[in-house]
Image (cartoon, rainbow, N blue to C red; front, top):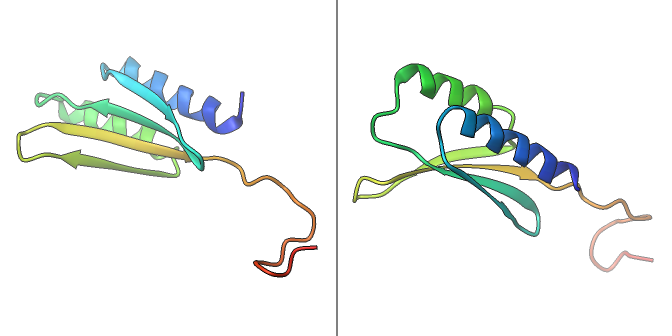
Length: 92
């Protein structure tokens, strides 16, 4: 399993331990974690959630006008190592 997937699964497990329902999605350049955030999330839980998210490469919160909130985090996939990569038009 790729390291990004392992990291994302670990983050999802930690968020689940805090009472959030998570889903892990695989993308071309990253693996993402999403979780619906309940309205009544205690302040201490928010602190713990932010401590977990600090281990992701990016994270944010999507809030809709209907009151829904989705927490997201992304773990970048490693760029595959290649020979001498010098940009477009300079490949061997």
